[in-house]
Image (cartoon, rainbow, N blue to C red; front, side, top):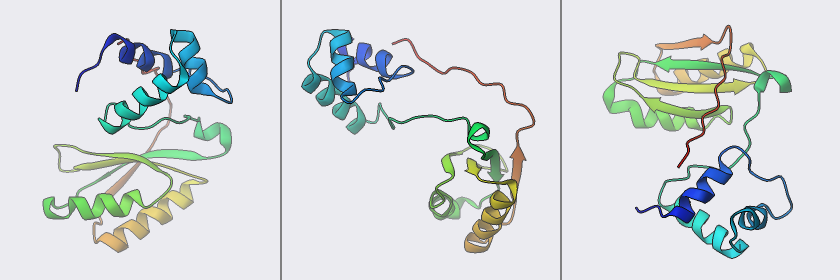
Length: 150
C-alpha cells in the first residue's frame, strides 16, 4: 500500500471538510486540480486497501435527542468473534475494539435513551451468555478534532 502526494491531498481534504454538494468528489477535484473520475477512482482504491474505513457524517447524539455510552465486556477468548458479531447487529453500535484487559471488548453505543441501551445490553448478554458487561456513560464530553495532516 503506497500513498502518493495526490492520495495524501485527497485524504487531507475529506477528513473534516467533506463538501456538502450534489457532486462532492467533483468539488474535491476542483479544489485539488483533479477531475471527478480521478478522485472517485482513488477514493475507491483507498477504501479497498483499508486506508479509508468509512465516509459519513458524525453527529452529536445529545443534540439529536440521543444518548451515548462506552461499554466494556469481559469475553472468553474463544467467544470474542461471536460476541462482536452480536454487538455489531445493533445499529447504535458505532465501533468496537479488542483490548488487552480483563474487559477485553469495548464498544460505543448510541440510542434514544439510557433505558434503551440497558435493554440492548441485557439482550446482548442473553444472546451471547456474556454477562460481565459494564456501561460507562459519559458525565462530561471533551471532544477533540481527530484530523491527520498527511
